[in-house]
Amino acid sequence: MRKITLAILGFGPALIAGPALAQSSVTINGLVDIYAGSLQYSGEPSRRTVVQNGGMTTSWFGFRGSESLGSGLKAEFALNGFFLGDTGASGRFGGDNLFSRDAFVALAGDFGKITVGRTSAPTFLTAVLFNPFGDSFQFSPLILHTYVPTGAFGARKWVANTAGDSGWSNQVQYSTPVMNGLQMNFYYQPGEVAGNSGIRNVAVNAYYTMGPLGLSAVVQRVRASNPNSGAAILDATATPNNYGSIDSQRGVYLGARYDTGPVKLFATYRSNNDDTTTGKKMDDHSYSLGLSIPVANGALLAGYADTRRSGSLLAADLKRSTLSLGYDHTLSKRTDLYTIYMSDKITAASRTNSFAAGMRHRF
Image 1 (cartoon, rainbow, N blue to C red):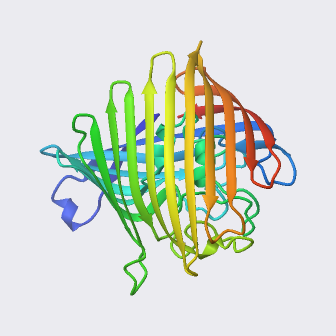
Image 2: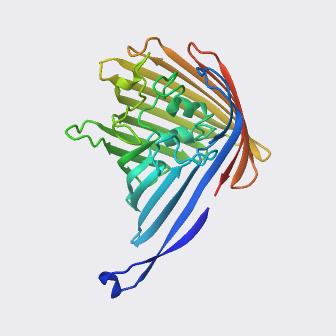
């Protein structure tokens, strides 16, 4: 992490009579994560040998700053964007926004914090904090089931079970102060659709941490797409299942973790109910289990996720089960090496195996 003090010079009638120099402290930080391996998700026709971005964390860079306004009040901002460490391309995928990780301003004080702009979706931290592989969009079973589709665009073999992306744009978020280990967050994202105020996203989540115990609960209603409006809220695929017709999702998410000392235990449960423009429905029920065991200068990781999908929208009920095993070795506070094995199975497709070894460096 690197801190740079920026000197801002102002020229104009309003500044000539007063101080001509103002200073603000801005932090520049980020992460680069690249791995090599053999990759095949269930339902994909063939195996790929890859050098790829984000085995444990999607690579990102950004700027963050704050200013004390007095009386305990503070102004904050963040501009954080993703990039592909293996190619240098901007974003998580082609066409992604420059600052799709964060882009917001905020006021914080004794009352809590009000944030306006693009921030993490209400479910994202629950997924990241309550599974041993964190925010691995390549190998965390929970993250794969929650956010990552498989197969070609428009012809998915599997679509994510949570609508609305891992970040919400154009939103207002209020976070309470932490009181006795409990913090609550309230989210509102207008869909910005003229003449239809019902196209909006709303959610509330809660996090409780006390000693070795951590708990989380999220309730949300999603009708607006992200990172930009106008797209399908879940996936654009039309056949054999018309996921593109889904226009509303109601979800409940629960997470728990407990640090016994020698072992960290993780568990989540998720239930989503999807409605469509055609009157058909789809339901997802998911659970995940995981553990992390400290070993020498690292940790052994194990995670499992299971999702059952049913409803009149589907040509047939679907199930996905994914198991990942890994070892994360710490070289320093900023650098670690990891190796991962993953087994993945989707209904009517073969079970596949993937292997990876990578390096993650924070700056």
